[in-house]
Structures are given as structure tokens and as C-alpha cells.
Length: 193
Image 1 (cartoon, rainbow, N blue to C red):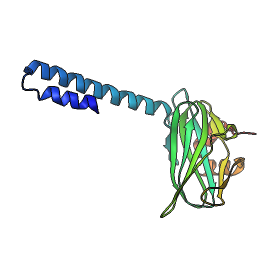
Image 2 (cartoon, helix red, strand yellow):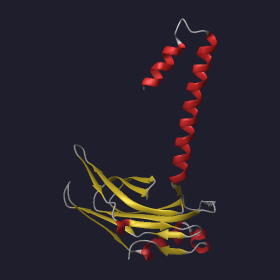
Image 3 (spheres, rainbow, N blue to C red):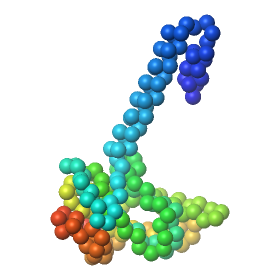
């Protein structure tokens, strides 16, 4: 913030010539564009993208698919999934009661279920997960299934959070909404045994 004030001071300094102001402005714009580009590259490097039913995902050579499934007995404001050592890869927002399945494309690597957030009218609860048994891998050219994240809150500060292997349900869901992908790519459980 301070450097921004210095830039504007330099631009409006009545004793500085026109060339000096133009040079300061070019430097400012250059730094802003470079920063924006670095942020976009970083986000692209770790972000997952949702695949809608029937959509052809056109996977890059280092990408695979993952079926993300959450089974909850409470309304969840969001579930965060991180790429291990790299930051947030995807956030699943506004999940209703029951099971929610979705298909995502992501770069190969190790990921983890990292946090569940509940929001009510007057309170907010965050449940940090980040344990080795909540990690899974995405491999290129395969459909990974890390298991269902099962979330059962006992209160606003306590909950049951586990991963259950319900691969048959995930396979049926894939076959009904993404039949072409299910037939053409190998499906494997990638969660903790």
C-alpha cells in the first residue's frame, strides 16, 4: 500500500518532469500486470475444473478425473480440498443434506479433504481435517475415487468425519451421467485403506 502512495506522489509531483512521471507509471503498470499474471498462473496450476454430465473434458497429458462425493446430515456452506503442499484446489459450495457427487478434472498429484464449514443464521463452525487418511491421488488418464466424505455433526464444535468406500454408488452415478468417460477411462479407488 505504501508503494502505491509513493507512485501517486511521484505522478503528481509538480517539480518532476513529464518523462519521470511516465517512467513511474510504466513501472507501476508493469508490476501490476506481472503480479496479476503470477496469480493466474498459480491458480491454474492447482485449480480443478468441474465436468458437467455429457461434457468432454479434454484432459491434458498430466490430468486425471476425480469423483468427489460428500454425504452429510447437515447443510454445509463449503468443503475445501487442497493439493498437498500447494494450496486450495477446489471448494464445493452449499451442499444440501444427503449425498452430493460431482466430477472434476485436476492435475496429477496428491490431494486432501482439508476443511468443512457450517454456517447457520448466527454461527459459523469450521472443522479442520488435514490428516493422512483423508489424502488421495489423481493420476493422469484415470478416474480417481477417494471415497465419500461422511460428515455427521454432533454440535457446532464436534463432529464425526470419515471417508467411506462406496465405489459401487460412484460407479453407478458415473455410468448414468458420464457413460462415455466411465467406459473409456479406468476407475480406481484412491483413498485410504
